Amino acid sequence: MASSSNMDLFVDEAYLLALLNDEPLPISDEKYAEELHLQEALFSSSSIPSIHENFLFPTTKTEDENYENRERGESSESQLIFCGICMDYKQNSDIFNGLTNCNHSFCTDCIIKYVASKIRENCDMVKCPDPNCKLSIEPENCRSILAKEVFVRWENALFEAMIPGGQKFYCPYKNCSVLMVDDGGVEVRESECPNCRRLFCARCKVPWHDGVTCEEFDVLGKDEREKEDIMVMKLAKGKQWRRCPNCRIYVEKTDGVVMNFAINVEISGAAVMHIDEYTLQKEENGRN
Image (tube, rainbow, N blue to C red):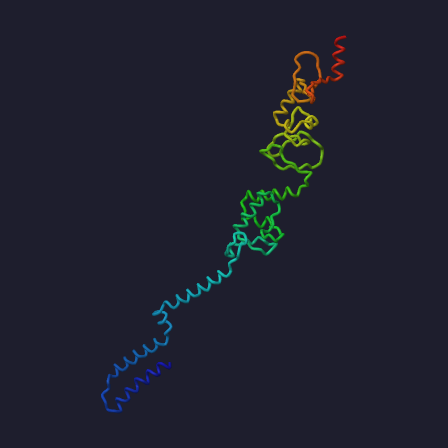
C-alpha cells in the first residue's frame, strides 16, 4: 500500500502543476489512466524482489548447498574410527559391533580374518584382539559375518571343550577322526563308528583287530599294529606258527620236533644256544 500511495502522489503532482500554470496537459485523461495502471503494476512487482533475485542469480542457492555438503562431509570425516588391526580409519558402518563385552573397535573385515585364524588353531575361546583385553568374543555375535564352515568348526570346538578329557576319543581311522564320547557304561570291544560305519576296538581305541585278542594286541610293538600286521598275526595263529623270541620273526615248522631256542652272540663272539627244559624232556621221552 505504501508504494501505491507514493506512485499516486507522483502522478497527481505533475497533473496539478499543469492545471495551476495553465499549461497543456502532457497526456489525456485516458492516457493518464493507462499510465497510472502501468506504474501500479511496476511498483507492485518490485515488492517481491526475492523472486527476481532467485531467478536472476540461481547460483546463490547452489553455493549454499555446496557449503552444507562440505559441512556434512567434514562432520562425517570426524566420525572415522581407527582399527587397531589394519591400522586404518574406517567409517562407522564398517566397524564390527559384536564386541559387546568390551569397548574396543575393529573393522568387520579384520574381525572375520582374526576369528578364522583362531579357529584354525583349534581355539574354542576367541579373545578380543586387543592385547591388553582378556574378554572373549561371543560366537553368536559372529554368526552373520563368518563363513558357515568356520562357524560350525567353532561350535564343534566349544562342544569338545565341554567334554572331560578322559571321556572323549576319536575314530581311529585317519580319514574320519570324528569325536566320540565314552559314557563309562558297559565295556565293549567291537564297536562301529557312527560317522564312517567302520568297526573299531573300543577298548584299544584302534581299528578292529579281528582274530587277535586285546591282550595279544597290547604286547605288539608300535610298528606291528598296522592292518597288514594284524592279518599276518591272524594267519600265524591259524597255521600255528611260532615266533622267534629274539627277532620276533614267524617260523613255520616243516619237520622234526618242536624246539624253543634262541642263539645269543656274546661279546667274545662265542655263540650259545639256549634250549628250554620242556623241549629237552620231550625229546628225551621220544627216544625212550
